[in-house]
Length: 366
Picture 1: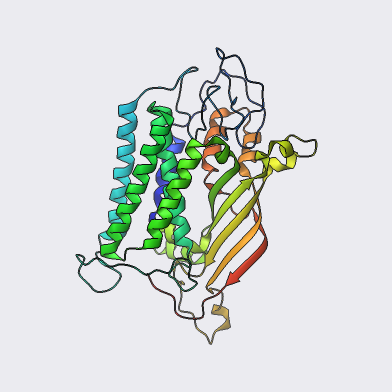
Picture 2: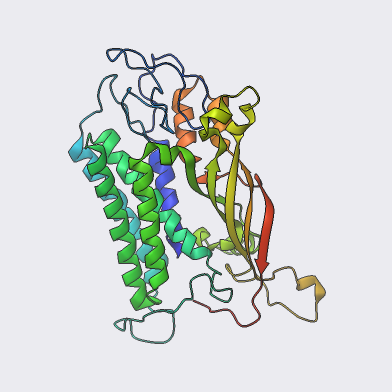
């Protein structure tokens, strides 16, 4: 549902502590996925980006993929287990507090009823007449994945936990949080089986990317966002629920062409560093509600139709672009690479084949 606003917390954490590790290291050759193709140095002189399967800038020769590189020494990660645990706990506590004020303090909203009544939902997954046309399901997966990865990196990079243990804890906490949100929704809106299912899919994806560098190098799950006209109007009226602006969101499952090393390293394969193949999904007109009452007699007011679109196309691999532009600024490069792992720049996607559906009946309000 509106849980995608966890991204605000993600940005705050990503921007503040993220650095690229030892500043005295030589810059690595450009790789759109953050991985260097430089020869592996001797074990006693770790270099930047020596893991050929890593989509991130590595701090040591055998390092797994990293979203954040939190001021590690040249030879080993820092060990701040307590501080990392408290930071993660504070992150979750802050988000839980926000959910109360954003969603729950007004009581039950699905229908006039007591809040001690649990409602089992029938939200129809990707049905064309569901309240968000299915975009909310991908939003659940995206948010759970992003928070799982963030927790993993805090525990691994800063806390010094074993990589797999950090991934298990980070993924488990993210899954637990969004399961709790869904259970709470059962008393205020409705409990959605499909929301829970996509929470789990997002957690599995985040765990796979955190523990399987080659898979992480190949695949991204990103959201492309630009405020819709409907939300811009509502924002002027004080509505800050940007997460429910599904009419401005496009979800992309992207395949990095630059991850195919034979293509990328070929004589004419440089372009693959900046181009991804993508499967995309978006809905328009469902949420937020139109900023006006649609008048069938007024043709000027027919620009807020409901539609649901799935497409196959190409999109800009902005990671490759910023890796190149920030080649000599490793800290900024690291931060941008992490953000662009989960965000797609607006207006950088070109659908090639698409299919659009429109509802013929009333839209489910919740």
